[in-house]
Length: 262
Image (cartoon, rainbow, N blue to C red; front, side):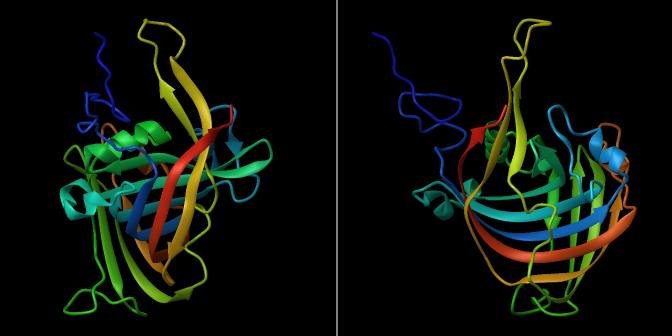
């Protein structure tokens, strides 16, 4: 008798209950703190593998985004078992071009839960473990409200090293949450060959994005952003040459797959 095993990702079992992640669609509710700036365009270009090229306009634009998420599968059951739904991440995106279209690409990302890394393997996000914290808004007590003058802090660390820190001061409502992260994602899904020197078992360029998005009022402000060096990280090479702006927004997102590009 041949066993039938189930699960969207490993480990696969007879029931599929042990899978690291459930089947899509995946639903997200979160607070996003975004800092946009310009760096040396050459530093962006060196992070873009073929067949991608730098965006034709503003090729040095970068966004670093802190996100405090609650996520779940279609059933929503994870929300009632919060250890399975709550996680934080910090990710860095740039813009690129493929066949005349502008895309957003995540070049660095850190998360604090294993299931978020599992989703990244499927989506093409280069996720690593990290320690991520950000100020949460609240209508009572000393926490900041969403109002002019409110201040939010955020930090990123990995392997016991602080990598980034910011303080954002809100100034006014905004029509957007920035522009760098405003395109479909162009990511590579990659898996090396098990044979030394062999061709990759998987190496495909894919497009993905939100199946649906809803969001609250975005706020714009100013940011103080600092990167720190670390022996196994290269985030600090994306130096802040010119600030663009900073934003806070609460969003709801549904992700449900993508499509093959090359």
